[in-house]
Image 1: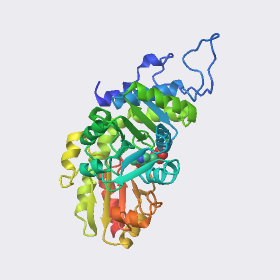
Image 2: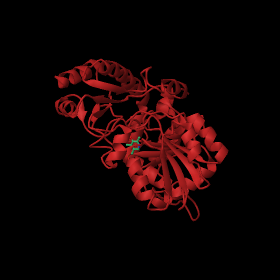
Image 3: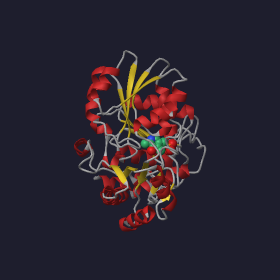
Image 4: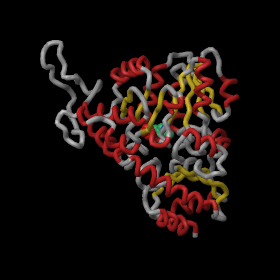
Length: 377
Ligand SMILES: *Cc1c(COP(=O)(O)O)cnc(C)c1O
């Protein structure tokens, strides 16, 4: 099946005993045993629930994985993933990550005895230089948030293989519709399902996807133990969202390209960061490893006043955190997603008072451009 068909039919209707076209919401905490030592396949919803299982099968297939686990949030997925490691372990991570991932690594995982090298993972030599005998994994986000840096996933996996390291890829921005890291050699894919997979800015969710049975068994054991699983109703919302993933991703990308090209021509805009522009330094790698460029754009304006003016005058585009939904949102990374980073570190990355981020939705592109144009005046 092709990706757009998988979005709708990945999990076979046979898994749904009632044959309802929409997987029912099994709002049940526990399941009755038919007899002693017998199970109907489900025992307790922390371990597994039919609605969540249907969703997990869908996401696993889209990512070409063996198993997917659905979590209450993306951060819950990442927090649980860190339980794979033990004190003393070292992880190499992209230095331009989602703000919450930075916060987890710096303030929680470090306290638990893990150590991190925060480097530019698009520079393969830097990865090699930072590997030490305690290194266990390479954690990559690509494209990154908010600077849109791209890492060559296949090349990182080749390095990792020679050192026996796990490669973890946060695939939130492109989703399996545009990029499938497991097929490029990665071991674990992480998602904030809150974003494109859910797609409607109405539900929080997260995923881990793996294609190795042993790794899946290890993670499933932690999963049933820590209990950060996705609820049945939210699982159903995610299933519903994924049905339209293909058409949303296409339309959002089409809009993003038009907006990026328009932004480039505005006198008050200094720089546009969009991986779908041929002048983006990683355009070639993006074209090789992904089948699309997504719809996240960052840009810098001439001065702080312009940034504030834009945020206060947009009318259709909304000034809000988050991304990936049908509504176009504008974010001020310095004050929102990356507010917890130390100022010097933030500024070194280019996250300053002139940087804005757009998550382009599925509205009419002409309306979005008119909204930006009016806000500039
Ligand atoms: C939002 C986000 C997360 C965290 O996910 P939540 O669902 O908000 O917990 C992780 N990585 C990326 C790239 C994100 O955008």
